[in-house]
Image 1 (cartoon, rainbow, N blue to C red):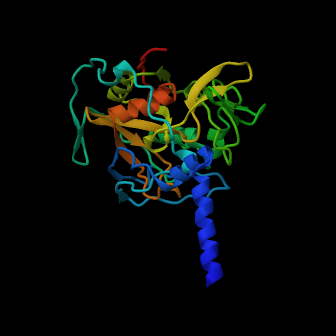
Image 2: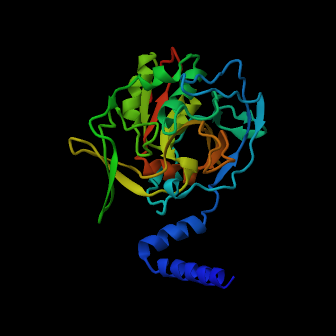
Image 3: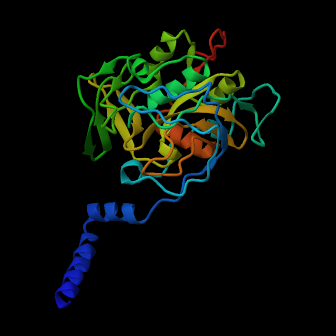
Length: 327
């Protein structure tokens, strides 16, 4: 008994000493003092699984969603690897001043009124751990009537395997050395949390199916796209949480502002003055077991998290649509 007391006392002393080390103190505080839940509002989601079936690769088993699922507020926050230690710092002027648009008939969905709402396909879970860009693309393609499986999606754009993404911490912040994400996907989507791509590269995937795409970078573009029935593929952060800023460095020296550990892709499917409705196929994971598949994010949170990803958005028009928003 005496030995046990001495051992416990020694552990307490070691823990206290560890808190004096800056790096370790930061990690311990990050694990013990959990961040508050993100500012998202889960919505009731009705899914027609006869129309929208999750197509998985042979290595991944499909799990059907129930015909109607009511999702509750998330209470768990992500772990250290997906939670930021930075305060949101990029909020454009357009956050509070949207581009003026013609009035349209409001849309009522599950008792909530929206300026625009595009019913979108849903599936449970991502194809692979870090394949979110392709999962978000699946939502858009399935909504527009395309029956596409994981292998077809993953092979629809080039994969730059000249270098596996890796981190270097410098006095100016985190640098991620990786492939050319403006034209290809870079990294191992099965295990490397740094693996990712951009909307510029994903344009090739949608255009392969004959869909018109437009790069958008502001609130007005999101609103105009959704009003015209276009879904918006976009880069953001997991749960729209805060982030660690990072700079992606491509082989030719070009850079792209991004986030370190909670890079994510989702689909914007509706909006109102309150915020934006999001379809997110990530769903419950070990970092947040109550993560909803559809939720609403207030505009301030939405714009800040999107801004951390260089306002990387891609409006995708339905088949046969002649809508053009810009370049």
